[in-house]
View 1 (cartoon, rainbow, N blue to C red):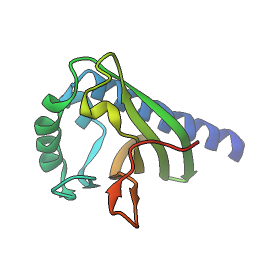
View 2: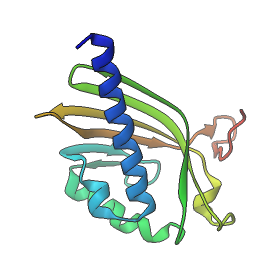
View 3: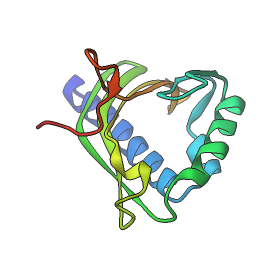
Length: 148
């Protein structure tokens, strides 16, 4: 298989993994969310505890966080970019929650996500995630909207 074809196939697998993760988050299904994380995943969050190491601790973060989300929502993404090199891949994108509860705090924020993936035994696993919220340096305040 040509290198370009392999890279396109690998990128499609990462793109599908991201879509599956977003579906699992919207379903508030912790089992499905955690199913693609490596046991030693490292996660940097936009809220305390800022750094979480290991899938078991990360599972607890999701279990605590999901009840704060709206009852029903979807996720919108922008600017998804994926880079694959052999058995390692990186992706970064912007996302926000969308839905009928437009006044819900979760619906007010665009966030940035960067994820690192490793392929072992033919399966991609998430080994690193970094979720951040842009801020305005002169004021120190979070920036919740995109100026596109």
